[in-house]
Length: 354
Image (cartoon, rainbow, N blue to C red; front, side, top):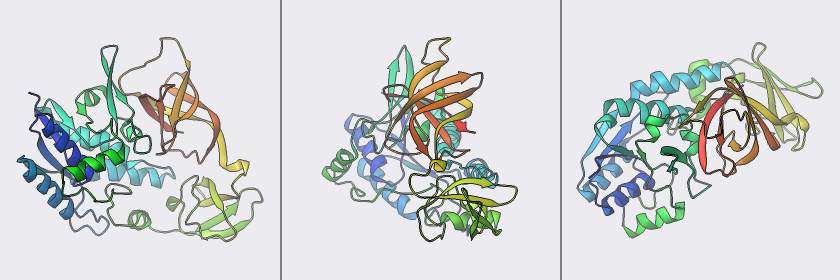
């Protein structure tokens, strides 16, 4: 019998994971990873309700639950990474780094190493091809979370189980309701994992402060407003600019001079691009394409959306160049470009947009 560690969050997805494992005859050990800092004014990650619901699930199935406090590791690795990227005017993705470094990094080193597998409520799958395990996409394209897993490595993916990856979200809810799980009707959590109820801008302000700068119309060079710091804005942003006569989109930032450039309207060419480059490209399992094939058909994502965009991947040394089949809005340096195979079945890996 496999020895399984199951990560629970208090949410419906991870509770259904526990239910399905128990139905299959497993007795997983449950673990709740605590990443919020109690009492920190800039982090409001109250774990009370989460732990209550996770405890209720553990009791329901007669399973042990242990709280693993990784808040210091989270702060040193993930929150600090996010602040550093924001300070440089880039767009970070803390959830990608949390999966790589905390959930399947620090947890594995401290706890997971003693188990055969770690099961989670992520919407993803694993595929066995060519005697290797690959990260596969979920059945539900809206909930698919492989883009958040695109920096994990082969050792990590080979130990992971995703019991709900073959289900649609409404099917997961139905299972929870039929099983009368305590969180069957609980809403899905939104936003960055470590902020809880804290506003993103308040968090950034706590560390980077405010500094007034000009908002300039890209086409005319005319100053049309004032912002409180380039670090509050990201390429492609539309909301929260405080400008009348919209829509306005952030299309460029001058970090040295603290200037935000915006463009007006939905169809302006300035906010679109059809290609971008990725540095430090990371294969999760390996290169699925034939050796020597430096240009291949792919699908990809540059943000968390249900759509997989078709394109071409051109590899030159350690840099990958992506040519998109359609116009892309808001290509932002610092964010992850996630590469899939042509059929969008396998998440091949990811790199940082430069």
